[in-house]
Length: 567
Image (tube, rainbow, N blue to C red):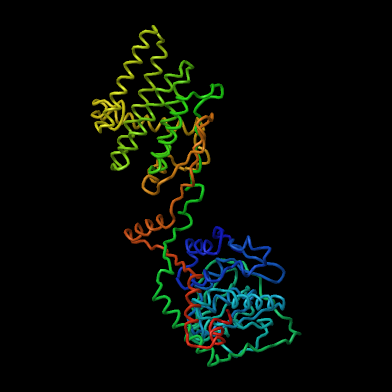
C-alpha cells in the first residue's frame, strides 16, 4: 500500500512530499512527522527504503505507508489531554507520534497481537526516550502496549480517539465501534476504504471516506479460544513528573521567546510543480575550438585564447544561464565557422578571436552596471553583427582572392577601422564593435537579428553537441525564466594549449527558498492557498534546553532527571 508520493532523500523531504501532495494539511501533524524519523522504526538493513511511500514488512514487524499514517493523524484530530487507543500498534511509530500530540495529560494505549513485534515496539520507545531531540520541543504522553487480540478485549472502557490498523470484518464492525465514546472519532479500514467515523450520540454515526486502501484483515479468534483480557489501566502521573513537565514547558516557552529564529518557514510547492535536479541543473559546456589536425598554438594564439577564457568567465559571472549559452556560442562561431570551407589562415583566425575577446572585454566593463534591458538589446545587436560578419566572410571566400595586394590592403584597412572602433569603445562612445547607425535605427533588422539568433542557438545546441548534461524542456521558456531567477558562476579548467576549451559550470541550482517565496507571493495574489513548511533547528533547541536546565538552582541529580536522565 502506498506509492502515491515520490520518495525522499531524508525524513524532511518525505514530509515535504506528503505536504505537497496534500496528505499532511495541518502544522501539528507536520511537526510530529518531522520530529520522529521514520527510518528509526525499520531495521537497519532497510533504512535506505524508509523514506519511500511504501509499506514495509519483515516477519511480524510492519509499517504502513507514510501517506496512510498522515491521513490517519489528520483524520483523528488528536488534541492534548485526549485518550487514544491503537488497535494493532505494531512498531509503535504511530503511537509515538500520537504521544507528542496528546502531550503529558493524555492517555495512549496500544494493543499488539504478536509478541516479537511488541518487544520491538518497546525497544524503539526506549531508544526514542534516550536519544530523540523531540522531547525538548514537545510534552510526551508515553504509550503503553499490551499483547493480545483486539477482538478479544473485554468491553467496558471507551476512548476519545480509536484507530484500527487492520481491515475490520463486517461481523465485528459494531464490536470495534463500542470503544468510541460519544463525540469521539474512529478511523479504520473497512471494505477497502479508509473511513473516518464520528459518534454523535448513542446510535448516530457520521461517516466520511478518506481514501481507498488495501489492508490485511484482523485475525478473528476461534470460538473455542477464551483469551479475553482487559485494557491497560490509566495511572495518573506522579507529582515529580508533573513538576518536571511544568518546568520544562516554562523553559521551552522562554527559549522560543529568546530564539524565534530556530523555526524557519518556507512555502512548499506541489510535487507536480517542482523541478527535478536534472531540470534545474546545467553542469557542463564542452566547446571545441581547434581541430585535431591543427598545429601547436603559437604565443599569440595562447595569449588570445587565455584572455578569451578569462574574459568569458568574468563576463558570465553575473550572467544568466541563457546568456551564458549565447555568449559562449558567439565565441565558438567566431572561431570555427570560417573554417568550414577550409580557406582560413592563422592571421585571420587570430583577428576574429581578438575581435570577440575585445567585445567581451568591452561588455564586461560597460555592461556590468547597465540595466538588464539595455544589455539584452546590446547582445541582440552583437549577435546580428556576428552573423553578418560571418556571412561576409563566406561571400568573400566564394568569390576568391583576386590578388594578394588587394587582400593585404583590405586587411590593413580593416585593422585600422578596428583600432579606431576600439578606441571609441574605451572612451565610452559605443559599447559594441562593428555597429552602424542604420543597424540601431532599423526595427526590421532588429527583428531579423532576433530570429537569426534563435535559429543559430538551436542549430548549435542540436547539431554541434556543445551542450552536455543539460535537461531543458523548452529552449525559449527556460531561457526567459532563468533570466529572472539565478546567477551562474562559470569556471574554465582547460589550459591554454589544450585542443579543447572545456568550460566547467558548477550546478546552476534554483534556490529553493527563493523559488518558494515567489510561489507564495503568486498564491497570495491569486487567492490560492499556499502550503507552508516549518523547519526547527532541533540540535540548537536541545543545547538551549540543556543550558537552561543547568542554570536552575537544583542539585545535579535533579537536573539530570529534568533532562530525562541525559547528561
